[in-house]
View (cartoon, helix red, strand yellow):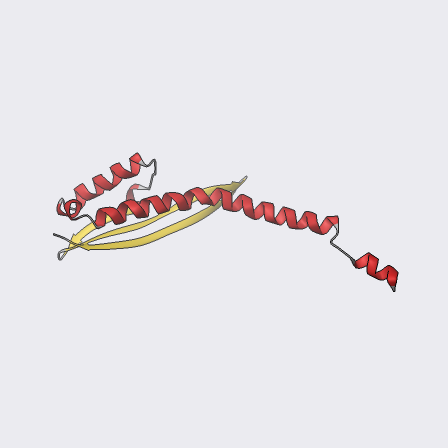
Amino acid sequence: MRSTLKQQAGASIFSILIVLIVVGFLFSIAFKLFPAYVDNKTIDSVVADAMNDPEELAKGPRVLRVGITKKLVINQVKIPKDGLTIVEKDGLITATLDYEVRVPMFKNVDAVVFFVKEYEAEAP
């Protein structure tokens, strides 16, 4: 009975190696996807600030989009041209953020991350 207890004590090197490989793989994926989420947080902040600024809203949708684009350039963030739409209808300005980011993972495998958010503000 005593010899069986010694054989079952602790984890084997093989099981520790498998755990390290899985953790490393997950860390690698998180490390590659992190910049896309940080850029989205910056975009969200810039658009939300513009939609809460009455002076920006008074300039109209076209000038509002140009201002947002300039702020994104300053922050070194890019979104597709059709990723941000700003529409004014019935005294309500609606900005819709709808874009995707393709992140290369391994060789010919990519991850696609979708970001969709809508902002509304009353036109002054």
